[in-house]
Structures are given as C-alpha cells and as structure tokens.
Image 1 (cartoon, rainbow, N blue to C red):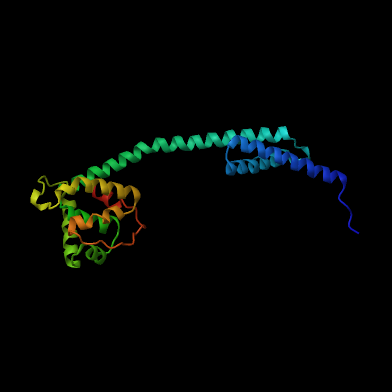
Image 2 (spheres, rainbow, N blue to C red; image 1 turned 30 degrees about the vertical axis):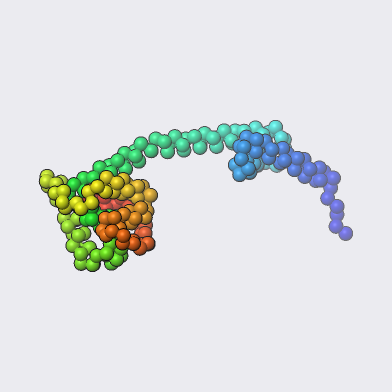
Length: 226
C-alpha cells in the first residue's frame, strides 16, 4: 500500500499556495497588468529561492517586500530605456533632415526621373528590368538615365550650375517628392515612392507591385552620395 502524505507536507503545500495567491494579488496590484504581474510573481519567487532557499522559511511579508523591490527595479529600467530613446530621437530627426537636404540638392542637379531611377536601383536595390517594366521604359533607357544620375552625383560637389527648369518636366511634384523620399527612407519601404511612378513617368500608367529588397539599409546609397 502507498503511504499517505504526511500532515506536515499537506500543511506546507497549503501555506505555499496561500502565499502564492497573496503574492499574485499583490504583484497584479503593483503592475496593473496581467502579463507584467505574472512576470513579477516569477521574478519574486526566483529571488526568494536564491536568497532564502527553502520555501518553508518564506512568509507573505517577505515575498511582498521582494516583489516591491523587483518592481521598483523594473520601473527604473524601463524609465532608463525611455530616456535613452528620447535622447536618441533628436539625433535620428537630424539624420532625416540631412536626407531631406541631400535629396533636395540632388534634384537641383538632376531631373526627378533620374532621381527616381537612382533611388529605385541604388537605394532600394531593384533590378534594371523591374524598373523598366514599372516605368514604361526600355532596359537601355533605364541604364542611360541611371548613368546620368550617377555622373551628376559624382560631379555634384564641383558643379555650380543648376539644371534648367525645362529639364524638370514635373517640377511641381519636386517638393512632395522630397517628402515622400524621406518617408520611405524612414520606413525602409518604397511603396509610397512607387505610387509616384504614374505621375512622374507616364500619365495613368499602373505601377506593378514589386518585391522590396531589405538586405541593405535604405539610406546606404544616399549616405554615399553625401
């Protein structure tokens, strides 16, 4: 016959479950969140086990004290993380302001079409044939436009003259084009840029949905042009 559990063991289990229930209520009260509360319970039990060993020596007051200090540590850590993010944000915004200034400068040395082809090929890593298909051009024409854009970038710091107004057939879209470029660089997603293709290259021409390459940061080529 199997021996019955001792009365002392049953009492210890009851005491532990009672402490666990009271600790859970306290942790949920501190966190005001089920998931954070459950994590706090586990963290408190872990600390109690490491510091005091046998649960038989625990009591509710001790567990609540451990939970309180664990929660304070968690709040301090989250506050530090938020402060770090806030501190970095001005630097990130400054980075995007630099991109906006750079794209504006690019548009003073090349047409919107050339800039679009450069962005699609060198920034977002589309293939020549994909760009040609979406922009209603031949592969040869895309290559020629890309070469002109790259040449303008190479000579940009030395050249002083701006392209003439008639070389920018859609100059009214230039300002919005810059804003779209900054947006897609931030999102690392050229979808909004692709939406401008019909307006820039051909009226009413539908742009195909392309697969976005993500193996290189989207601002890489722009940083090289700076």
